[in-house]
Amino acid sequence: MDVRIARLDTPCESPLASCVDSTASHRHPREYRATVGTPEATADFPERSAHALLAEIGMQLDSGGYPAVYDGGFVGPCKPPVKSQPQGQEKENGESGSREGQPAWQRSRPWSAPQPWSRPRSRVARWTRTAARSRTCTEAASDVDADLRRQYEAELDDVCFAYPGAKVWQYGNGMWLRTESSLLRGLTKRATFLTAIPFVAGHRAIGWGCWTTPVSASWIGPRHTNFPDGSVCAFEPSDGTWSIGDRIVELLDLYTLWALRHLYLEVFSRWPGYQAVPIPYERIQELREGEFCGCERSDRRYEECCKRADSALDQLQALMQFVSLTGGIRKPPKWLFSSAFGLQAPPEIPLIKEHIV
Picture 1: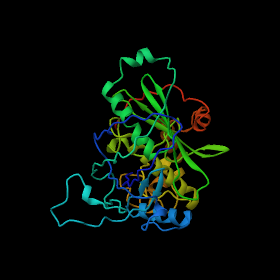
Picture 2: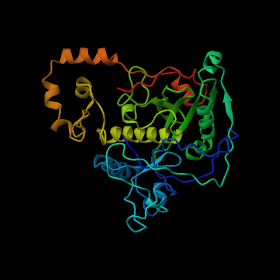
Picture 3: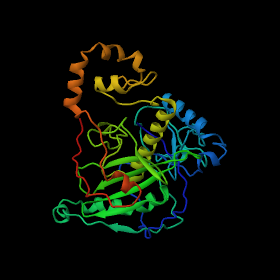
Picture 4: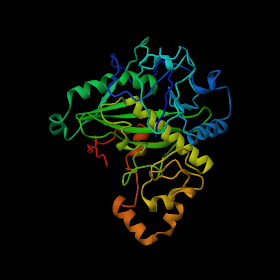
């Protein structure tokens, strides 16, 4: 999936003390961000019910549009940019593609050409890192990419502004982040993410999502989570949407949009927009009427694409193939819920090799 981003600089009211004062990395920039307010607080997004706003975002996803993700993890529909210069005079870095209150938008799917951005540095956030003891620090130290570590530690300032209240646990070979996404104004729960960022090249980031309230936590899944651990599956790694070396905020924004889609599924009983579901038995079990098919022709509705062929398969053989490829079960780790509440540090950073199929 893809997302076009709009952002607002807001002070980070974090109890976690000292953020690093340095410019975020722009290696492989993926998104364009403009300085705007939260969706319901601007002329572009007048006050409306969360239900109506969610429905509008879902229609935009279905039509190939790209919602905007705002600071605090709010999501709103994105509008086409207004051209402010004659043709041929646009800046290559895309800065003229969006004006105040008008996030950039591009109708191509999926994962269209990215543009760089920069966040004005008018304030310095303060951040405290929590050092977590790792049993493999000695072994990990030899594999740690020092440049990657410096890059991601330097990005904590932007993470703090984009997701206020974020918490960090430091390990010898990486760091865990706990962030919250509000999604929509008036929503009584938040999407809370535990995300492991390794400092080891060639390994991928991994994260889990929970719906949280002050008194409860529940796993966001099983749709579009990985087998067998139930971690977030917000994009296809083979499409190059995000990989180690790209910016942390971009990954958290992708997770935020993933959670918004889960909310839409919960309310409207249908996954909005394009999706990747390549295994026939998984499509049979999970895809609902009106959803886009998850095959390579994913711009067609399932009932207009693979549903008849999937239903004609020998279902026992299809199930056996599904289990042999995936294990058949998705289940989040036991520590997830206490870490989502911030009651305990997550375990050591899992080092999982990036595998592009």
